[in-house]
Length: 309
Ligand SMILES: [Mn+2]
Image (cartoon, rainbow, N blue to C red; front, top):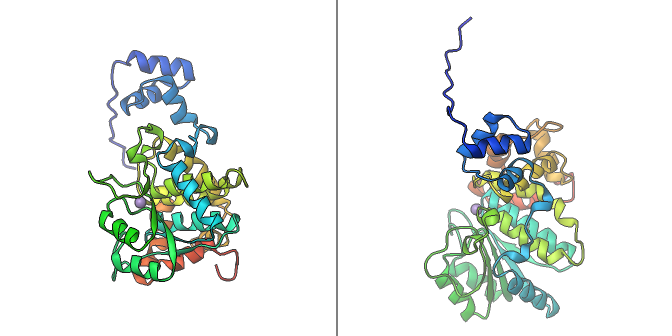
């Protein structure tokens, strides 16, 4: 049998911070040093990294634009306006759409969604889609996972009498669209800075449902984990917590579409890791938008019918 030839080179001197972490948290000096090597420099940060729980999630209202967005959506619902969710064809986009669709369903308010065609239209808001939605009488557009660069398209929407709420996580351009914008990259809250598109849509959905069904948000954790991992955002801050709990939620998901997907991939009853999302589940959800239309993936994640799933 071949001998393993790996050598480990350790940082010789443990920094005083690492020693503190090791004593205070009762963890091995090696783990403490690893935390320090990864930029974790105080007890609170280390505790959150190792033991962060759902109670540590920030209120959605800490995100800029949230109040305005919630007020505008409630107004639209009171006035019976037609609302469309404008998504994207990747895992982040379809999970975001599915969460908001479910949220509005809980609120008993009918909404529709639009996902551009990957080949014909490409990513993000486009003029033809906006015109189509305006012609259909939509007056409020809520983007997920896109929109932060769509200055001209938002102007066009305005010309058509449509208001746009942008929820996005991409880095904003110097000039942002004239719209209600929720994007953690605009805020200075470290824990939420790296949220994926789904994290931002999730926060909006939490805020919309907090009066009627304050605990319902836990049912979205499976989709949040799925899209957060598939979108390859850093698993730090809230992402780490959302994925930690979301992976368990995914394995135990009551969503017929997730159950069907787990069964098909031989993952039913297994402990799920991020690898399973990145290389087994994610690509299958992405495939719909690459081969035909991402609507199939939204249907899969939204259906309550086992047969259809
Ligand atoms: Mn994304």
